[in-house]
Image (cartoon, rainbow, N blue to C red):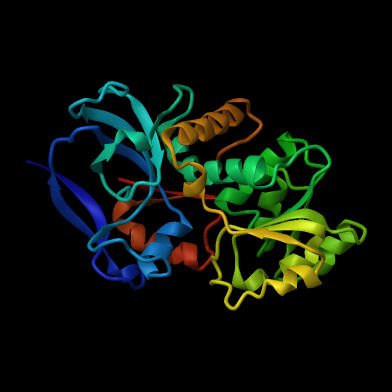
Length: 327
C-alpha cells in the first residue's frame, strides 16, 4: 500500500503536539479522488483546532483545511474529475499532507491561468472575503467599512475586493508600520496602527463623526467592544474570528445602547455548505483574481515539516498576508 506523510495531533496543545507521521494511503473510495498536494494553506482555524479552542471531532486529527494539487487517481463512480485535473479545496480535514484521498464534493477545478500555489493560498481566505463582502453585508457604492487585521490573508484580499465593488471608504487596522504600508498597497484608503492610536477615535475622525456601515472583525477580545463604537446607528458588526481570544459574556443589550446595532457570527462553511454554493463562491473568487482587481501575493512559505514553527509565527503575529506549507 502507498504511504503518505501527514501532520496529525493526538491531543490539544501548543505547536509541539503536531507530529509529522507516515501513514497508509489506500486507493480512493467511491466518490473520492487521490491528490498530490502542490501547496497547503495556513489559517487561524488550524490553530483553533490544534489548541482546542474548537473541539476536535476525533483523535488523531489530521490538521489543515485548504490545499491545491493534482488528481492522481479516481475512485469508483467519479465522473466529474479525471487524472491530471488541477484542483483546490477548502473545508476537509487533512490538508497538511503530501498526498491524500478526498471526496469530490469538496473540490473545485483551478483555471489554467492560476498557479496551484496561488489557488492554495486564496481558497479559504478569498472565499471568506467573498461571502463577507457579497453576502453577509453587501458592500457596494457608498459603503464605508472598517476591516480589522487589514494586513492579514483575508484582509489583503478584502481591501482590494471592497474597492472593486465600489466602496466609498475602506478603513483597516494593523499592528505595525510595515503592516500599515502593506495594507495601504492593497486597496485601503486609511489604515490605523492600533499599537499607536485608538482605532475607534480615529474611525470617528475619518468619517466626520458618522461612523461606518459595517465592521469586519476577526480579532475578537482585543477589539471588543471598541468595534461597536465605530458603527453608525443600525450598523453591522461582523465578528468572524477570534485571533486574540474569544469574546465572553456578551450582553445583547449593548447593541441597543450603542445605536440599535446588528451583529452576526458567520463562518465560511455555512456559506459554502453545498457543492453548488462552494463552486459559485470559488467562481466569483477566480473571476476577480483573473480580472486583476484582486492580487494574491504569497508572503511566507514553510516546509510541511516546519508547520509547528509556522503556527508559532502566526500566533505571535510575525506573519503577514498569506502563508503556505510546501510538501
